[in-house]
Length: 199
Ligand SMILES: [Fe+2]
Image (cartoon, rainbow, N blue to C red; front, side, top):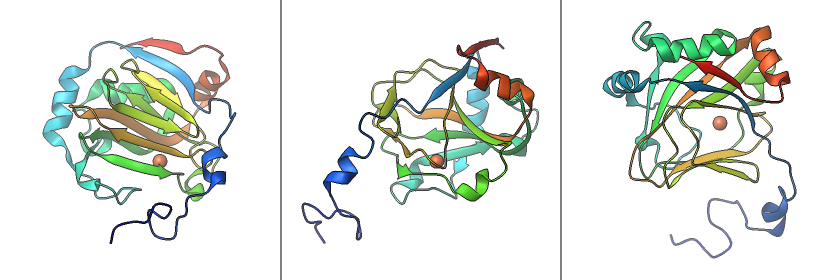
């Protein structure tokens, strides 16, 4: 069925509130840290180990998302594992290299609040390549693009609407880390400037 002009998906309706809900909101993303170094060889390893994502918060094009959980391949991508440790993650619940192929869209969503009931449970994404033309992340009304490799982005995932789309010509890898944090992570959160880590 061809969607009507104002009713695109299911019962979701187009209304003015949806267009203005984020107006004037501050940037909800904090850059916690930046990693400098060369981990391209580990990206090659990740590509060789990637499998099609079994989960996705979106019904749109899940077939184009490939993932590699680091904990399933201990020691194979030591620099990426080190990133999680340096940020102060202890018990990891998610440590996925997410390879979003061209055409893949993870549509807007918030993450389930139950996953964040423990105040020590935090989540970040780390860009693993430079953001190319067409690769975007959205957090509420704030669009992120053309990022540097190794940028660590934090937001309040259960309360901030977010999405990602890859309209570029190349696969976009990011590292998604979630788990229990220690005081190191808290000090990164408290700092005004991103901390630089050399790998
Ligand atoms: Fe999410």
